[in-house]
Length: 118
Image (cartoon, rainbow, N blue to C red):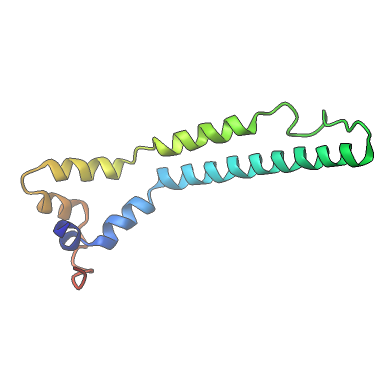
């Protein structure tokens, strides 16, 4: 992992964590999780009202009626877990070369800022 020190750990982390693809995927995952949480909360609340009041509660007009938010969340998690970041492809190609440090320095030109890290 000496190459991380020589190329700047902060540069590597910054490029990966600030990639547009990751930002968009995390935002979509948050929305899917929020939708699923809302749907589950609404279903639980409806169930409690029906049981407490002993009446039928019509949920057909709910925005979550008939929507399988669980499947949507699982699909989004799978998509997140399979996310391919272009910067990671560049890193993998650089690591396969004979002079991987030089290759990585080309990708992360502001190396040296983390020189005190071991």
